[in-house]
Image (cartoon, helix red, strand yellow):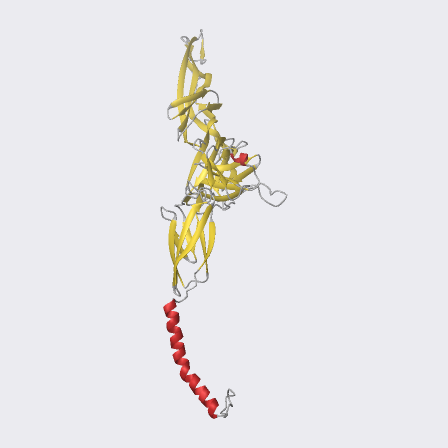
Length: 454
């Protein structure tokens, strides 16, 4: 009953970032950090009585915030004391609920005075006052909680990639498996995610309220906590590193992929536009023709929480193998042609059993023997085909594309058909020849110079 307006508040959890997703916000924290807490209270001292033969006086003997305790899901992590407490935590994981609890104690001094020889005519004591001193203690516990999500960078995986067809080209596939801000592959060469950041003051701290037993006043707060926010921008992930002297960027983003989500609505006082929808890119494929292969042996992933990063080794390496496409026309006529496509690895001559072959506008999938058969209509003299594998970052065994050109065999008639054609031609032209020679003979050689001379 003596402690009034007691409270404890989390001034800041740092480092932390509030992530805007859809219509919800989530506060992400690092596994190790601190919570800064503020607590205060008011002591209601009873009104004393200074009149009559029995009098009493009240005063505050001692007050303190004895303990400020930080716990995560009921497990005590750290303790402090005082109006401003900085509490440390380490090794958080999952989605714990952080609770700050403050224990406030007050000691009051109650003095009672009694006059056994009271003179009513003069309203005074003719003798000595009897004095009795009493000490009263009061305590109160207040608490506040905050739900957070620990942004751990513990699930990062990936692999390096080399190319048989381009010896100076290297690449990597990286799976951060969580929200990330940048991925650094070599010095200052890095890829930037589509998560952008801004800082804003936390709501509820604009005004300071001072309360006494008889009055409440408000004033603009001189201290406000600033919170980092992250939101999906409309710009896709990109490479901010400047190009080299020959105009080439040292790193290229082949593709980012992940779950497509509904974009968030930012507060009206934030003049920024978020993407809607957006892809939560938890995987990325990058390549380079200027960096050395060793640049991709280790990569550093920076999280969305300040100071949070993790360097991982990409020990596994894949090779984009060179392929050979061989086209053979097995059947052809004026209306269609049947083309057999065979795809093999260039180095081992083993059959390639994944991917597709495209000839003109027809596409076929390779079978277990590395073969596909395509039928095209109205074939031209030259037949052009192309083999295309799945993107090298989308498959466990990547292959390079390859092409081939073959000729459609000429459609000559057989010998019997030629003999029949010759006989028919002769039979057609005999009457014509007789007529022409006869006319020339009758006209004394006017047409062909043949005349009747004896």
